[in-house]
Length: 551
Image: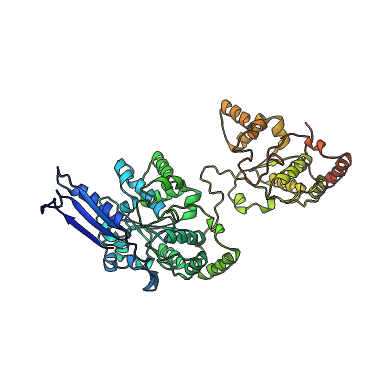
């Protein structure tokens, strides 16, 4: 990129402070340079000056950069051209470095720290200063204005927040010598690869992404900018064992419980933020908030073509499943096992519901023996709801009829026979209710409820639930909850009635159908009822678990 500046009043040779500014900007980062020039000019111009600006912007797109081997790591010139100055960077003891492999949560954590330290500094900083200027990119080098090491050196704030994607062996030694604090963020390799792929597609300062299959193979072989993901996360993990001022975070933990991870950051950095301040940070750093924020979404950086793919694309755990073929996944898993050095460095490729509220409320239809053991180890509270077998069978039949992801139910007669034989999704009703009932006898953290009791006296069962969970709602709140969960109210509530779920064909049968006790007698023939009763007696004879089929 070439940049020329011509100054002076028309027909005179006056100085930059009082004359017009003519900028001829060529290349990918023209607008970035211009923004910085104008901002610097506004802060350095003489009082009373009224400069005009004449702009000639020649956006001649240069070819995408090429990878090359740099001391054993795949790099591009934009990150190595200023190498001596990077290596001689003078760190300070209070510097904080946000280090990551590309697309692992750098911007997210950078914004968290910026808000924690400088969120009180007035609205101008938040509305007019892009995050990439508040937190400079150490190794970036786009002369004359976007030189990360110089930008970091000139930061007016304390502590200085600096970001880097450098492998641990490339970090300037002054950071270690000064005892600077480093926050390393790691992301599971499958989501990291997908995010990096889309980033390469839209960022003209990155090498061509190519096809997904080719990119994934390159990623596995370490042939992307900043080298091997495996070497990156492994080497930083190893450094953590010997350098106490390194805090190693996981993207998936941030998704699952952002508040807790901010607490850990504050503890590591010695920040004493109030609960209100932390809450403001949590609200500001949600994915949707940052995606809409021009100071964090990189919409001010023209080198990134957000029409190809947004810089902030999804921010989820598990999107890799939409990209990896089964064969690619199997190959990747085998490669992963070979290259991960440390058994205690573990990544999650799924996060349970990505829940951020507390307590987390999770539903499952799993038989008791299939429940993850961590629920027992952590003494999680479990509410089991059982319904009499006859009404369960009828309701399940109509559910299978309208649910496209359930097996075909067939006729009522054949469905009922399979129900009795336990040939259903999630298995035998008998084994399910008995298994959980038996577990309840040895686990005090299980509350066993009956559907029929809920129908008969919803408010009373709500009292039992509150007592079990240690909740103390007001009488008015209990009345409101009781009213909202009435069948007719829930059936008309689009947030709970299944109308928003595309896999449900509500024309065949509504998701919320009748909500009664005893509707089975409209489906069972006399012969079916007699056969069912005999089968029930055999399978439930050794338990004190009892159900009501009528009220």
